Image (tube, rainbow, N blue to C red; front, top):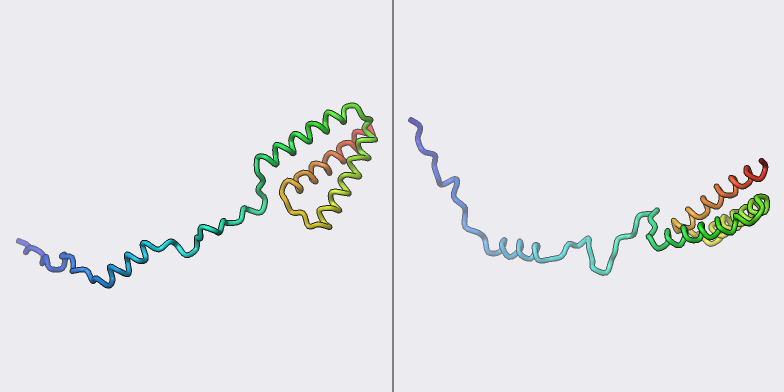
Length: 119
């Protein structure tokens, strides 16, 4: 038959008080990469719900006003607004995501009204 294994290898060794104190101080210390005063920067292209609500409300009001104006006039106004918005974004270095979305919407609306006014 087989002999019983030696149980001396499986016994826990007594703990070292200095090592225990070092482990305890490490566990109680907050992580060094996270400080309470520092918040991580948001991703580059993120917007909040409030900004999107204002953008949607503004576009809805403009669509209501545009119903009463001729398409050529709307195309001219949108073209001027698109060029001015691009100039403002480049001059002042505006990088807000809502500004980028607004400029893209202006550009698409301008092109759509240009095509619509030709028909």
